[in-house]
Length: 277
Image (tube, rainbow, N blue to C red):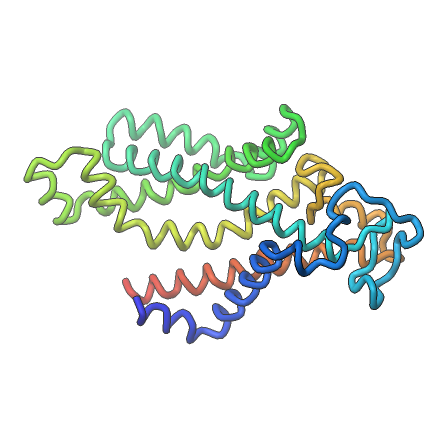
């Protein structure tokens, strides 16, 4: 484990990714202490300072009702992280369970589960999420459900392929010979050998989940005002380009930082796993 951590830290790009992720998570956790105007995360109006360009008081400027943009971006980090965590906590167990069950069982159960998975995978992710949100009220909870509905099939397909490969290995055959149950073989023998792949994919997916959620908010189908959300801020500011450029540029950079950071760490983890294998 120590050797793996050293390999990870020896890669400058992975270190940069870890620093970016730490910056985002640290900002989200301590938002109440590092933001200059904590009340601006909600329905606050200050028309005396509306639409101000970046200055010493408001380092990222203010929005159209005078709220500090830096404050709202930091609190938007908190919302984005919560969405990403909840979506993966729900979708990963569902996808892993279905992949294990289909890959190890085979037969008709394999056929049914994987055809259901293929149906979901055949629909573009953002289109599926938009379809779900079109049927539901655009709330934070429904946004999470919409993204979850499109994310579990990727884990089902990943674990299915890994399980099909692993179930022919000697340690699985040995467990079956001594009378181990199906559930023991799946969850105590095969699943631990899939953990590295799951962690790597989760790291890569975290940034993409946030990007999809931001895209839904950009289209007006995600987090609703006055809750701060990066996608909503980009959409609002896009109408006032190029004059009020800060309304779009800074929230867009915030999304870039999150996605870029998780991609760097995910790529480093994938390369490390490939080296081990």
